[in-house]
Length: 413
Ligand SMILES: *Cc1c(COP(=O)(O)O)cnc(C)c1O
Image (tube, rainbow, N blue to C red; front, side):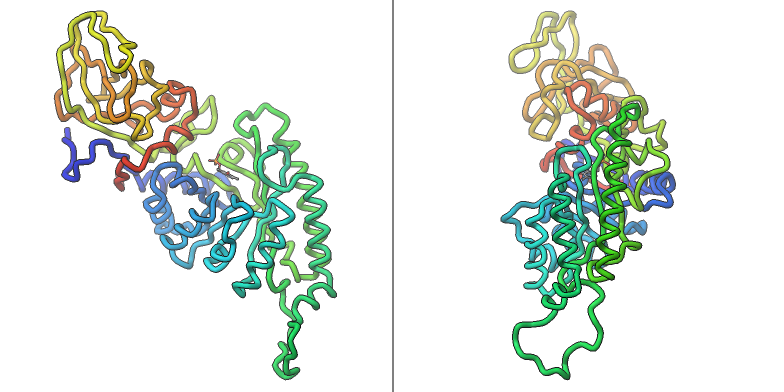
């Protein structure tokens, strides 16, 4: 039994990088021939983006996705130039020049952003690599059908001979001798490298909407192919287009898997997105182990209450263990009076309200000592999915909400 470590951290998230790499290998094999894009948004689902992304990079993975530009810029710093980084969530005031200067590939979900990206590409003297994102039914981000048609028309014009010739020709006089002899392979400021979408109900395999979304996606793919082929290479090559719609639940349930790659987040971290299968069923190992320690232990007489509101009352003489870890660490208060933790391999209930910094665990006559390690969740304790049920949420949120106060510590088992 270890005691609190020398840094004084009371709650630690141990990140098992060996498990992470094993999960990536299992998923990549399942996806093949489609390729794995590692989704590390939201601080790698709370696991710590630097530990996770560097751990995957060192194992040979090169393709990473995040939501925001600031996440993407951080990742570029962390991984260096060799990684491919895609980001898809930004707004009208986001600095796209910084993204392009850092060679971030961008999802395109509005017609306006095509112009903004072209402008940013020109002013940074880069070729923007973009993934058109089509809304196939989720109703969240992505080009809705009418906008999709408008975007394709815009691209058709951009890819036409005359338009790209006008674009390529600077307005100022240039010595004819220094004119490039060959035409640029792509429209100078924009290359369409991908087509993407996102499923709404892939975690419920019996629902018909997933195949309907796939059909819409396939027809968008045909339409985009026609536009790219018509532009004769000026907007990118249709045969090289990266096509991706699958997330974790789709990657684990659909066969054949649509697309040339899949954007996988949750299952990389060894968590199941499916109601009826746990990590073990899927050949995955949970990567995060959230631990704390018993810092106080007291005898409690029958009738004594626990924590704010005294929502729990001891029914017998018992013992309470005090465990650092509360909603300030990202542990869900809604799991109060429902959650369990594991000490020396035995499950004990969390009693009373989970507070900002600490929780009370009723250990009764169990063999527990001050300094004992407490597994809040992890492979040898309750699962993040159980915490999800106790907290009226999902395992995705349980790990992602773990706050900055918690030290992420890399371990390799
Ligand atoms: C978060 C996200 C993913 C990853 O989803 P998982 O279910 O965690 O695999 C993929 N694509 C988009 C657009 C996302 O927002």
